[in-house]
Image (cartoon, rainbow, N blue to C red; front, side, top):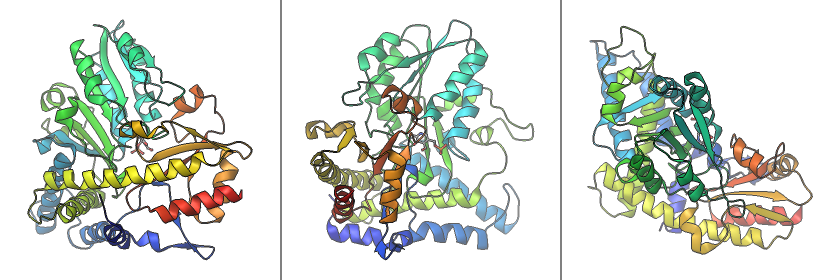
Length: 415
Ligand SMILES: Cc1ncc(COP(=O)(O)O)c(C=O)c1O
């Protein structure tokens, strides 16, 4: 668990948190849309541009140093996702673009009659790429429902939709709308049993909990550094043998070897170096809370996420308890503390009389930043009959505090 002193020390590293709005400190509850960035990440991006800015593969100093930094970023991402082979990592502009590219390659292996399974709890970036790819291949898409009472995946429905025709199961590690954590290790095992590949969207999961592709048993996993304290860069992991076998849509001068095969065009080098530094920020937090400067990066990340998880659980309890005391507010998702292992501190609400956008605007006037709408989790809001207005999302990360939650609750009470 992170102490108040450790949280304060974390907060001091994020310059954005010093911002004031209308004379009051800004409260950033918009983490699921993109977290703030520590100074060391900002410095790493600036340092790259000032000192090692060069294209890939040159024989002169800046290019050699730039390539060394990019190689180290591959290693850092391998540690973040828990794989042993840094070449299994590919960077790209964002998760959505990486997923569309991979979906084209996978669709080449599908035929009419094949099936692809997606869920109604997912962000559309883990739905539309597969729907469009299936359409191109003549394959069928099956949608897994979720329970409307607590917004957890209907696992019976999921199992019923698997068959020997299933080629791919695409599912999120956690919902960016309701905070629900999905049992992805079980889902991957069920998919494996029918011979299907699995694609996990860890974008919403990554700032809160340890990714572990070995324990998950998945074939692909994607995340985005701007959701875990880094710049706008997407990250893809895939099993080496599958990445090698698939045909990538790439230009001819790029070798067919990993990882370059999956990284089309010139990459956002400064962003990738910033993403590396975001992982280092988390690892150093782990070394601090684990009281061991010598922890290797993966073990340090494990320690960091354990501490973050405990702290965020406290915040979730505090927030949900406070929201439940407001009788004009409805929470969409898990509210039973005994099920908090299955949720992240991302809480979507609706207000009985104020629509999501005006509610978010009124909170913004008080310096409280929340998202409104469907946050691209379109199937969620459609299933809950909440389109077109959606919900208001309160997204906590480890730099948030109980005092900030108090300010939110006071503002909601006043409305
Ligand atoms: C769960 C989830 N998946 C995918 C995405 C899309 O990620 P990107 O913006 O990197 O394309 C988001 C972005 O909000 C998300 O929250």
